[in-house]
Amino acid sequence: MAGISWHYVFKFIITGDAAVGKSSLLIRLTDQRFLANPDPTLGVEFGSKLITIPEENKIIKLQCWDTAGTESFRSITRSYYRGAAGCLLVYDVTSRKSFLNARTWLADVRQHADPHLTCILVGNKVDLCQDESELESNSNAERTSSTRVHNQSNAAKHKRQVSVEEAELFAKEEGLLFVESSAKSGLNVERAFEQAARDILDKIHRGTFDDDQSPGLLIYNCVSHVDPEYVWTDTLSSDITLGWTVF
Image 1 (cartoon, rainbow, N blue to C red):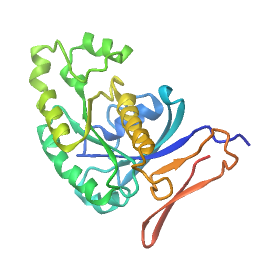
Image 2 (image 1 turned 90 degrees about the vertical axis):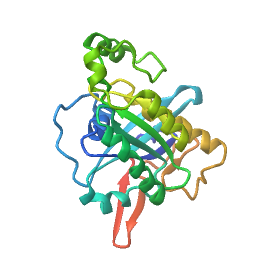
Image 3 (image 1 turned 45 degrees about the horizontal axis):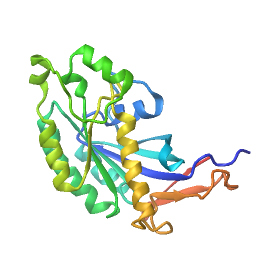
């Protein structure tokens, strides 16, 4: 039986209004594909992904919980907030309502999640604000570190309801990371998770997270750990216990 092939496991939650593309971001991250019309998330959905942080020489397993964006599932999804190390707070750049509601989602996460949680604000669906040539260029490379979208056509600009500057200001005021993305093209999807993971690593190095007391983290000092059947459990409520086998 092979040894464990990662140094860390980080629990992530993905939250925000319904139809902002949360499930599409997760599918793009884990399967490198795009579903034009995914089924609405009922409760929560799960996906995992190994990423590498080259400057740290570390491999991180992201265990991501995609939460429903409707009020009827709020009591269920809140159960998954506890112990999360990272959060993607997603809005649709063509929906001002979803951006305004991000404040409510953020308050909910902060009420129920670890106080040291790293949260990145993700403005999704920028493909709707870009012309085709620009979208293809950005998708092929993801080579720019800027979150800004340039050279938009007049029609594309008209679709945008949340400016980059406004979102950046909100993120700065709330102490959030920020990026714009497209689940359709893949633009900045992995970067959003990697940026949050780097921030979590930095918190580990600074001692912000207690290795033994933070249920959203699993930490190993070497890749060849001899316990590949380790089961990580997180008690969600008094009568529900969630467990998942890492290998």
